[in-house]
Image (cartoon, rainbow, N blue to C red; front, top):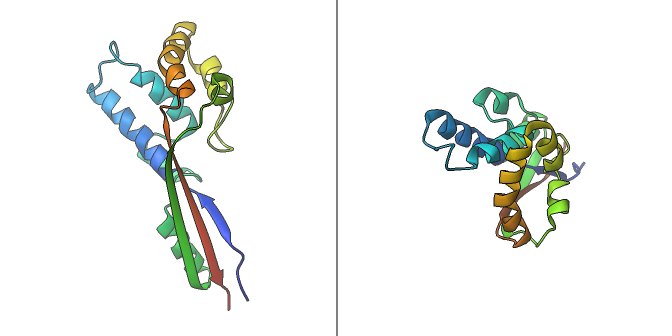
Length: 154
């Protein structure tokens, strides 16, 4: 009997990047008066866990493709085939409105919600002034990770 193909997106790298940025900010390596990285961190931390504990307990970030393969084996599947696809592309040109209304996964708030609920008016202005030109000129590179797993169940 063949198991059905399974797709999974991996957000662990995004969470690890948010945690790394948190550590750099907390260590003082980044001068908050000369950088908006503390605002970028606040944005990412609202969408991904940014601590080791948070990553470990997160259903979107606490596993890798190897863990997925081991789980399928432990469930009794055999003849496993796992394909990992990683694409790094410059984003297609998006309007600012589309960008701030999007979310990277179903558990994450949109950037618009984050800006409205967690940023002051001045922080929103600074953030938009720095990020909007990059979004609208397609300077952002996006990394998309997708795993396809097929297996046989005896």
